[in-house]
Image (tube, rainbow, N blue to C red; front, side, top):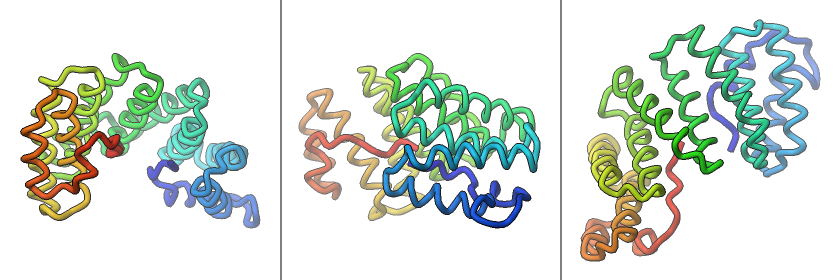
Length: 231
């Protein structure tokens, strides 16, 4: 998945027009990524990092964005060893330039947490998810979809770790926010119901799964389909 943290910002970088301009590169990278052609997209993303650093400098949010996007491509390819230092470099830039309590910093923390999740490094992912949630609660407030997504991500991590007691209240809080902010018939609300159903399935609490089905989640959601709501 191509990271959405501001290709539009990177496009502002000044560079010669033509096929190698940031705008052209962004379009080609996005197209290749959507087609799953990550190996072809990576050289273009590397070139975009060079152009952005040249135009904006090493410590600019646009540079961090280009690093994030390159890291995301490596992650999609399963090359976690190359993705990790790029995510870390982008995070360092955001923390220094934008500050710790900025939505883009939170997004960067979440990206690194997701990488550690994919690597099976749950002990590294947990504090990053917690910090992301803390920032979003403070900056965006409790009743914001991004806050709900952070609650859900942390809950999903606890579910995978087998810590159901910690996962359940987080899933419930995410569901409450989605229902209030997005409505009962929104796909994200259905996904929250699904995630809670999967938790109850893991716990062997089948009566609660039946109750969730009665609340409107499609039956196929509540029979073990893998949740995909991490951000």
